[in-house]
Image 1 (cartoon, rainbow, N blue to C red):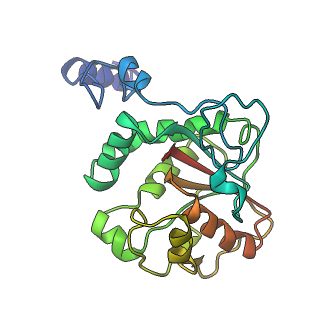
Image 2: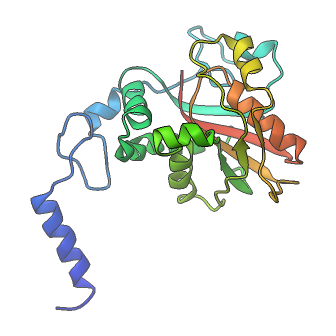
Image 3: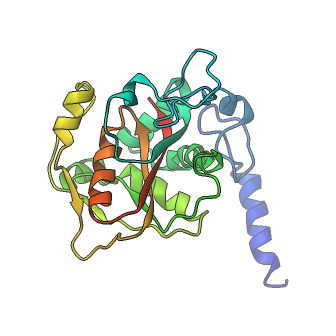
Length: 242
C-alpha cells in the first residue's frame, strides 16, 4: 500500500468506528465540525445595529455608526472590540463549560465563533503584527489549569499570518469582576497588567483576544498598557459579547 494512502485509511477507519458528533446534542457531524447545523442556529448572532466601539447590540432601527451608553462617556483604550455572538443560551453554556468545567475540547467551537470576527468590516483586511491574549494571574491559571484566552488565540493565530505572543502579564490577583458595576470594574483592574520583561510592542498593530466582553474594562486596561508601550493600534476580538 502506498505510504500516502495510510493516513486516508486511518481517517476512514476512525470515522467508521468513532464518528464525529455535535458537542451539544451528539448528532453526527463532519469530523472538522463541532456543532450540528441545528445547534449552530441556536447561537445568537450579533447583527446590526450595534455599537461601533464595543459591539453592544441596539434594538432600534439605527442605520448610521453610533456609540452605546456603555462607551459614550468613557475612555476606552482599544480602537474597537468586535464580537460575533451574544453570550446567551447555547453560547453562554459552552463558554462556561469550557472555562469553568475544564472542558478544553469546547475551545474549538468557541474559537470558531471568535474566528468569525475577522470577517467584520472593522477587522476585515487589517494587517496585525501580533496576536496577544489577555493574561490570567498565575494563581488563577493554576486554579483553572489553563488560560482560556491563550487557547483561543492559539487557534485563531493558526488561521492568520500574525504570530501569537504572550507579551502581557497580570501582576495583581483581582477578585472576580462579575459582582462589580462598570466603574468598580475599572478601579479593580487599574494597574493589574504590565508588559513582560524584554517584550517590545513599539509600532505594532495589535489584535487583543479574550473569550467574552462584558463592559470592556479588562480589554481597555490591557490596551492602555500596550499603547503606553508604543503600540500604534489595539483592536480586540472576543468570541461573545455579554
